[in-house]
Image 1 (cartoon, rainbow, N blue to C red):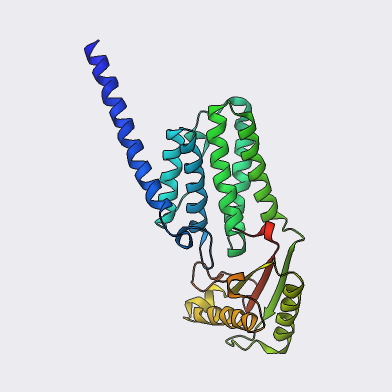
Image 2: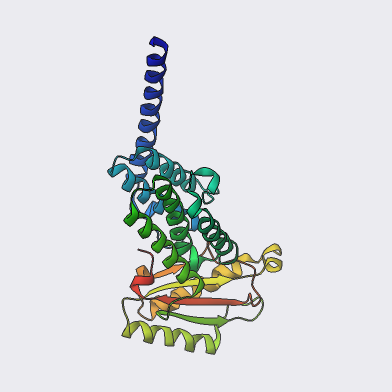
Length: 279
């Protein structure tokens, strides 16, 4: 009996220690300036993941579910450090047989999107889909909060819908460039003017400017061309009256839209309505 009590005491202390560790991490991340962790211009996929996992951790911590809070805090911390953070699998949770098949299907759908839709314009919704999927699995294991289970699944489905079938409230202008050139040209100027005119009529819309480049050009050391093209387009939009805070211009290799593409000599201007814009 003494040994059993001693073992329980040691286990309790270990759990308290672990909870203290995660809560310190959660508090530290929560203290970071919003622009450093929240979705913002130039953020990559991991920045969005960190933000969404931290929101889940705070939510679980508030209802005293320390185990779930610790799990999501660890994922938020890993994402913030730039590590690869993958969705949970069936092996991570004890899911009842009735739900195992749909979990497999939803995870395959998510993995497919993470592989085929991994571009800056989808980063926020991909992060939303992954974190809501993970939260859904955690809620399924608990099995007693039907409303929360449905909320997680509905949020996952909505994020996937936006990724796979972009809303009509998204306007996309494509500016084509001559190989090796950053000159916007007359047709590009007209498209920028069209985008500005649309913004003047719809000032709540947010802009994302993405410069594309293919692998061959990147390997030849010309990645800066895509960066300069995106910056040139952003600068023209600002000069024409679009506020800088309404424009996300991707300028780093990972988050700049420097990805393989069939027509890599281009810049996309994507305008989204507020409800389709991350934060």
